[in-house]
Image (cartoon, rainbow, N blue to C red; front, side, top):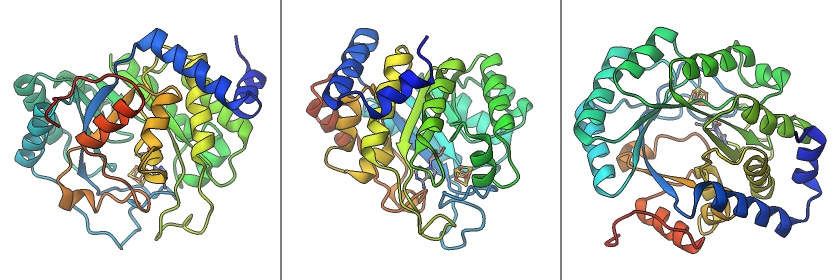
Length: 319
Ligand code: 5AD
Ligand code: SF4
């Protein structure tokens, strides 16, 4: 079993091209050349939490808040599926809508469009997770953000890592395919704790994990901090692929935001096998400002990134 020292070795000492190649080979062996493309719908930027790093935090009064109407969400999902998205990911801040309302939307998308629905709407009551599961939601994304409990508590006032992990366990027990993930380059985050993040993903036996660099966002308490590097995020993606090869890993939007031309292609070359293309209506997407200069990845961007990485996709040739 690779322990912390081995993961640390992958993160900092392994020769760059050798690490990348090992990760790419593990990806191709476990997942094949195909890259899954999800359709992302950021249906609300309202949030009751105050994560220090995030532009959607409740105390940020500089952004205008929205909640898309049910018919807009379903129509956007329809166009994502028509463009070749294999899954609809419904994402929002936390605590900003009625659970029964979301259950209806999940039911509508799964029955009418016949694609799996992934939810990413934060820490919620078990009863709500259960309701959405019964409505047809198959997957849930809830990044653990950092495995360092003290850092977690500093970044998430009033919340604990333990509760986050309990939510992940509840979701798995309800039969969801579960996704976690974390940021690299958070203020006060050590390389050891990034190694622990990677080991935690394996310990939780997650089906998915999103790893992205921290990007400072104006109007947040961390605005003046340095951000994480794409290079370290790529090494973390590769290390996780090597020690937990069966999981799905997106080349995250944060990578694209640091390097719009190559970020996601590099993610795919370093162990990722999933992309998320945004189908959030553009007027709303500009207010989904988690961090500064966040990219809106289109289906065409996704197709080009996949082709540039020498991989295959099931998107329409007419893109
Ligand atoms: N930089 C990078 N990623 C961020 N997220 C939130 N704020 C930032 C930021 N400033 C990530 C978190 C969250 C996901 C939706 O976006 O990991 O889980
Ligand atoms: Fe809300 Fe999620 Fe942003 Fe935290 S990271 S403030 S929970 S949207």
